Image 1 (cartoon, rainbow, N blue to C red):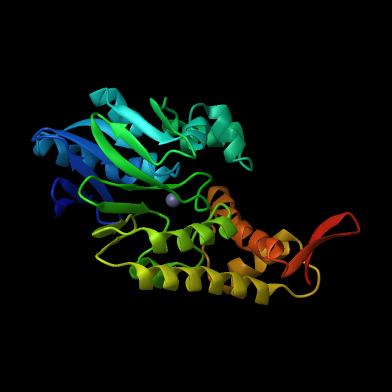
Image 2 (tube, rainbow, N blue to C red):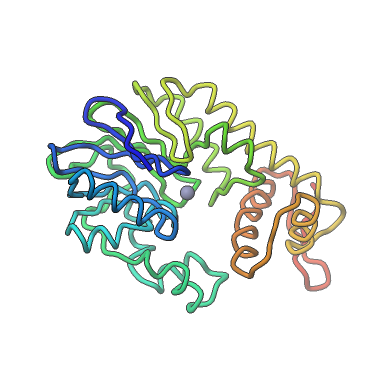
Length: 297
Ligand SMILES: [Zn+2]
């Protein structure tokens, strides 16, 4: 784990699997953009911050995922820092019950076990028409890019460095990803298009890239996600239930599913591609002897 200087007062922590940007308010105080994953990254991030004598005074969260907000509650307790987050996502992680609404397929006990550490109180709600946020006297610009998660945002620091978080994935991730996640793929693709207008001097992609220019990356991301949707379309043969599609994909795409938790994760991923095909009129949902099945239009 190491710190990389990006530009001016904007730096980022390279955890190995993720870039976590931060903005230096002064020699000691920093504002984090996201907080990393608890299970695999907390110890490393924590000791790196201690070694550099950094005090976290604020965290601006891009979205609700476990690998981005896993340490928010921990740092809030440790540093008493201020937390900013898109309002809709802040509500999701404001209680276990709200997390259960979001992770609907899992029981409350499972939600508590896997996501219980993601419950915290947000100090500054970022509303959907809000274009900037003042955190500890520093002004950050906000671009709303929903789709990857319900209210995902990109955050630009005063150094003109845009953190696009998970609105894009790097070429390295594309190489290994069989089915990258989107909450609502149709919206996610529209948000990716929006990024063509985001003009910054540097761009940071959470998993994991740093670029001076992202025009080609945006186009390649859109083609990549659409290509996977096309592969899911090819799977649909006759009338198939969601489970039929799931079974085919797990077997033929060599996706390792060894636990109920992993099944739920893969099901959530696949669902967004199936819904995308449905919403764009390529397939439709029908009733067949009491079962919901998808067929090609
Ligand atoms: Zn994410």
